[in-house]
Amino acid sequence: MTVPKGHDSRLFQPLEIADGKIRLKHRVIFAPLTRNRGTPLNLESTAENPNRIWYPDDVMVEYYRQRTTDGGLLTSEGIPPSLESNGMPGVPGLWLPEQAAGWKKVVEAVHEKGGFIYCQLWHAGRATIPQMTGSPAVSASASAWDCPDELYSHPPVASNERVRYADHPPVELSPSHIKRTIQDYCNVARTAMEIGFDGVELHAGNGYLPEQFLSSNINKRTDEYGGSPEKRCGFVLELMDALVKTVGEENLAIRLTPFGLFNQARGEQRVETWTYLCRRLKEVHARLSYVSFIEPSNITIYAIQRYEQLFSFAEKEKFLKSWGLPGVDLNSFRTIFGSTPFFSAGGWDDTNCWGVIESGRYDALLFGRYFISNPDLVERLKSGKPLTPYDRSRFYGPFEDREVGYSDYLCWDQQVPNNTENLPVQEAPAARSTHTVSLSKT
Image 1 (cartoon, rainbow, N blue to C red):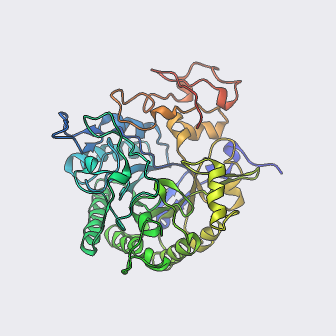
Image 2: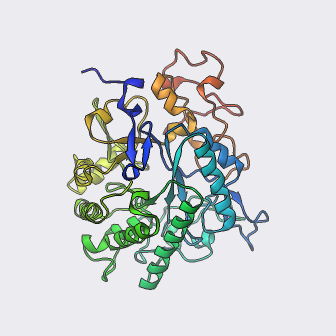
Image 3: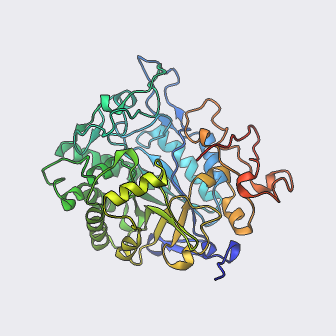
């Protein structure tokens, strides 16, 4: 069977989202990627007075501008709706005027090149520490991390030592605190639309706050927000209802990871929980802009390979088998959502993306890591040019030299002619203006 590649692929055919309001010119979507490149509001951060707030500046504007194509869709990095919700340093929120002004410049840069951009709303929940936010971490329940030795990603200000999540367990959100949290989401969603974002995506996966409510190993509540698959969906459904009232159904999307393990999401009853959630979303919000899922596996016309952000394929397969889901895929959710545009993320590259849209499995594919190192990824895929390898060590800041491994990757036509023309993709030298990539295991 001949599989269409390059410009012949359906990846480069139009797609309507936002209930027909937005017509994309291709289906290569820029995935939401935390990069920790924001500028601190408090430049004199100390242990006694640590900076806890960041905003986008011109470095971030350029990064998003570089990855914009005419008629293409970008999803912002996760944007915290409050100080309490921020999970990592260097991540710009959207609850202060300074942050809104910075994100407005990003949005304008994307629109100037004919692109579209959605604001992803991200609440870390228990995946943060008090030293980061200045307040206790919050979650569905006061559940300590399953692994007592897992460390928070960054040392606190004025320290060289990372701290254990288990030493800072979250507090359970009270019903009134839940209402305030939902209002925080809605306030930032409204601001996002006011400054020009084309829509809003709720991050309800990867073990962050919404998925903490969905996960039985984290959510131990016995009230209307816990105790059964249906009740564990209550927070997400209530939040989506409120966001629909705030920004409109056609301007709202959601990201889900039904089979992920990130941030120690180890809940059982996966199929029952996420099936109920998706059916209810389709029933009450049939005009959502799109739905975005992370793969339990990379399923192509060539092979099936398990995908997981943190664990090896073998470890992921072990978890799936323990849940009685050794051959699980996203087909049942695709069926539930029917005509709602259905996006897939999870390890897509120039070797495994061909034939996927033609198969009818998905309507669009999200690319992350290779979009980092190839700002002109869309054109490279279309024309069959080799991809520049990414440098994982520069994924997550903060860094003093913020541009390195961020906005200094070159487009193909900026590189020395023929420098990688005859090399396999993974052997192609990284073309950078300021540094050399160190190839390591991914």
